[in-house]
Length: 143
Image (cartoon, rainbow, N blue to C red; front, side, top):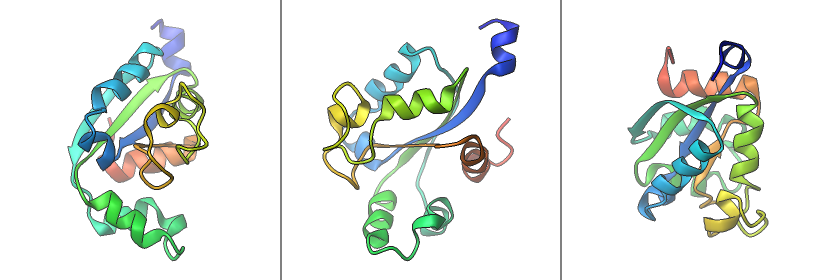
């Protein structure tokens, strides 16, 4: 990556959810992001608390499906990661595919591997503001 590319590169947050780990898809998902040209900056395996999930999904707390989402997100480890590259947020969102795996296009991570709407393998930031908030939430100072 040239100096100019580093200057315009953006960071994004990607979380591999419990089903990605349970199904042995971590390597496949990371490889797809790397093959696209994104650079992995930081990666940590974490066990999420209900409090962290409530902060992360604050916009969904109180919705009918929130209890199912909380149970799913806290049932096992996740992998939180920071990725960098020009247009990283939009690129990752396109690679991940539609939220519901049944509606996601073939060739996307969810289109190829997700089994349903809730168990959709990956969370990816949807805006620069969300990326900054999620990186701070999961990594603190996020060097």
